[in-house]
Structure formats: C-alpha cells, structure tokens
Image (cartoon, rainbow, N blue to C red; front, side):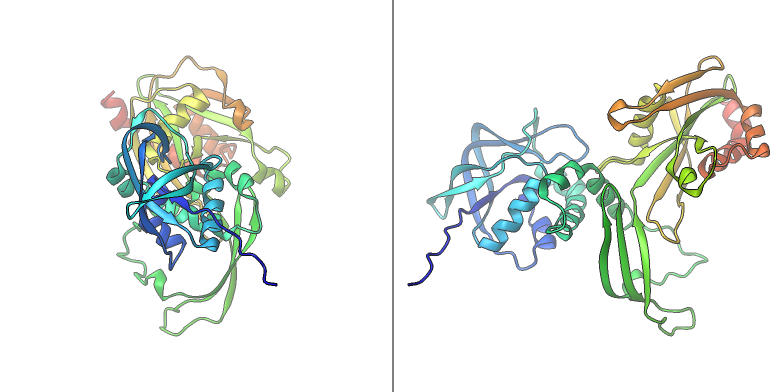
Length: 373
C-alpha cells in the first residue's frame, strides 16, 4: 500500500516577492506561473524599504503562483522572516481558471504601490536580504529572523552600496571576481553576523596566493555626524558606554563620539545622519558637509562609515541626555567650544577615531564655515 501524497496549497506572490529578479537570485531554477488576484490592491507605507501589503479594493493584482512543494516551503520561510503576516487562502486566476492559493497579506499602508520605482530602488536590497535569510534557514527560526530584520536589511543595503567602489588611481583595480572563493561558512549568527571564507586571491606578482582561511565580522554601514554651530563656534559630542573598550579591558569604557547610527535598509546616509541627530541629541540640522566615506577596520570587518559635519544651532554650553529607550540607549550629550574640543585631541581624551577625524577636518574648514554662517 503506497503512501498518500501530501497536497500542497500553492502560494501567490505579489509586490516585492513577485519581483522576478529577487526570486531568481534567491531561488535559481524557480518555476512559477503567472496569476492574478481580483478585488485587491497593493499598498505600502512610507518606510525606506516598503514591503507592501494587500487590501480589499477595486482592481486586480498580478503576481506569480508557486506550486512545487520545496519551493513553497522556501517561499513561506522567506515571507515569515520578512514579517509578511500569517497566510490567508484566496482565489486567484491562472490561465482563466480559479485556483485556491495561500497569500501573505504583508503590511498594508496608506500609499499607492509603485512597482517600477520599488524595483529600481529596493529590489537589489531585498535580493541580498533574501539570500541571507535563506543562508540561515535551519539555523535560526523564521520568527527570530523577523525580529532581527532591520539588521538584515541594513547589511543588504550596505552590500548594494558597495557595488559602487572608490576610485583606483593608485591602488590595484583588480576585481573581486578574480578571487577564488572555495568555501564560505557562517561562524556566528546573532544581532551581528560572522563569516569564515576559504579562498585564494591574486598576488601582486600575478601568482595565486596560498589557500587562506579568513574570518570577517559582517557589520552595517553607519552615518556619523559632528554637530557644529559656526556662529557660536561650538560642537556637540555624545558620551556612552561602549563594548569595544570594555572588552579590551579599558577601565574607562565610556567614550566621547560624534552622533552615530546604523543606516537602515533603503535609507540614504544623509537621511540617516539627520535622523540620528534628532534621536540622539534632539537636533535639527540646517545642512550637512561631507567629510569622508571609509572602512574603519578593513582587516576583519565590513563596517563602513559615512562621516559628516552637521551645521546647526547649539544651545548654551551644557550637558544633556538623548537616545532611544527602545534601543536601550543611555546617552549624555556635551556642548563645548571648539578650543576645548581640540584640547581633547591633544590630551588623548578624544580616543575615538571618527571624532578625531571630524575635529581635524573641522580645524581645516572652520574659517570657511564661520565666514559663510
């Protein structure tokens, strides 16, 4: 007596998950059929990376119907990790035939969905995010990945930004594609991600290197801002407890820094800079001056910094408080004059690389900024 086959309800994909470039990048060899859902509309919120949702309404939504059991399992895992909600069963039309299909309703919002604009801006980010989600399948539950989705999307956004490299007028222009990647394994998967690569890379003499094993800390891109008032000639610094100095054994692990924060998925460095100044210090910036874009510890980390000077009005010299309770931030702010800030560099109390770089840049540009204030 044979075993009865398990009947799998197809899944109807629309909006972000219906972007065929996203699906094919994550699921090579995907087999999907065109389908349409009647009496629904796609809508979204105004997040930098809107994932969209379905709501009842006039019109129809085109998408893809996935029926192969293993692919349905993978797509379901992706949808749950992206927080697209519990699946509902609706009737869709495939080749003029009604078909019962599961659909993940997503997060409906007040805005109309612009598929072309989304595909241009956000699809590349979602491609990398889905690839990371699938790489963690079997290791982390979908609901736990959903809880860490902001970091996944932020890391994916950093990978997209990395596709536009810095010039190579002096350094080698050898492409990453020439590196022979033999293996890549995930060594840590939590709030942060760790990977170990086994690889060989071209040497400067043209010969291949020995087979190397190198570990990398997969971080996110970050925006850092030194708020500066050119009229009063003063800056704002933030102070907070930092794990790096603590883990090194520094007896004083509280550090003075610029305002800083992770760049969210789909967010520009400039938007992140404005947002972080508002969250950490309650400041509204009038303008941004770009200082640098750079890797901070390229020997072992993907972390990439966008440094800015933020032109703003600062209050009288004082200490204040800032940060988001939801992110367990305990931040103290310091408004000090420029001379005092430079004295921190001389004394070594300013022992944070981005802060030192920002202050030295400000020392160079200060006369121009003050003259135009």
